[in-house]
Amino acid sequence: MTIASISQEPHTPTPPSMNRGVSLMRAFGWINLAVLVALLLNNVLVVSAGFSGPLELGSGLAKSYPFWVLMGMAIILPVIYVFRGPALELREDAERINRANVYIIRGCFFAVLFVGLFDTVIAFMRVENLLVMLTGETLVKNFARSHFVGQYIHIPLILCGFVVAAFTRGLGFTWLAFMIVLAELVIVISRFLFSYEQALMGDLVRYWYAALFLFASAHTLFADAHVRVDVLYAGFRDRKKGAVNGIGTVLLGITTCWTIIVIGFGHARAIINSPVTNFEISQTGSSGLFIKYQMAAFLAVFAITMLIQFVSYLFEAYADYRGDPGKRQTAPAAH
Image (tube, rainbow, N blue to C red; front, side, top):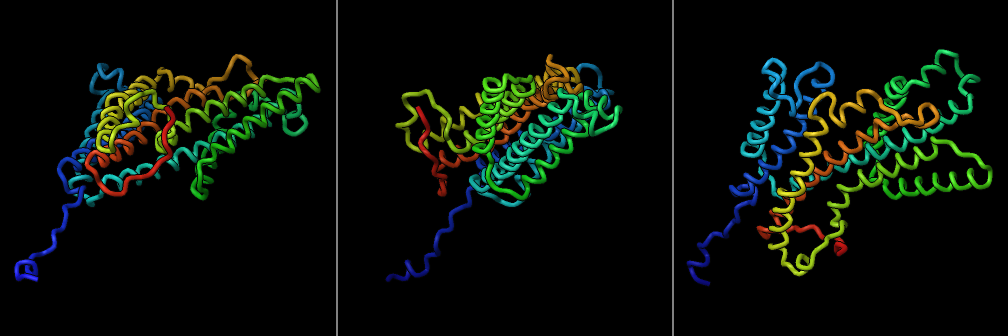
């Protein structure tokens, strides 16, 4: 052993998060998430106080200043967090974002489960005139109004869903699929054996089907279980896969999500805001479920959870491109 080898200090690699490229990537991702939160907060002001949404900023500074203030904060705060906050690796940051997204999706799952079950019971009692036997005339009339059911039945059930989600693990998509099959079975038995059918039965199946496909999309991306239509990707090395995933995430994934969000929340009469604020129901009226407005909100849940997941996916893709250790193993994607 030579003196040179004894005196030589071990080389400590620079943490990936200290790399300038990593910091810029993290800043880009967190700015996207912060702008999302800012836009949702601004949307509350749009529908409640008449301020300007992202598609009507030409209406003057008096109506649009909350938007600009929130957007400014959404750019400054993430930059401070990334460059002044704790140094995190890309994969660690991606995992933290994914955990938050999993909670949102899990809360939405329990929300649609509770709302679907309770609203089905209420609709059945409303159609069969059973509410008169249990409640007063005033409450019977209120249960025929979507605004009343939405505010005093659905919203508390949605909040309960997120409370339950805080104490559970797993996303529950298997159980939701089972509930859909069970609901279809009830429809078949009641229709062909008892010649009984109501609009509420079909509404429930459509409601849960929409939730299943739109809520599960983000988790499918995380598990790399989506279908890839390609002939080249499977043969790429991890570095090239990371580059392809990163570029595709920015150019196709994130931009698509932002398009849905901006158009859906563009103003008070936008395609998501209008049905939700009016508690819109289907043409079946009081004979069906009062959940059509929530199906419009499902589009927002889809875009929001996919955007969050795409940011996490982007961090992992850049980590793969850099060759960072700790790559998450997933099942091979279908082709």
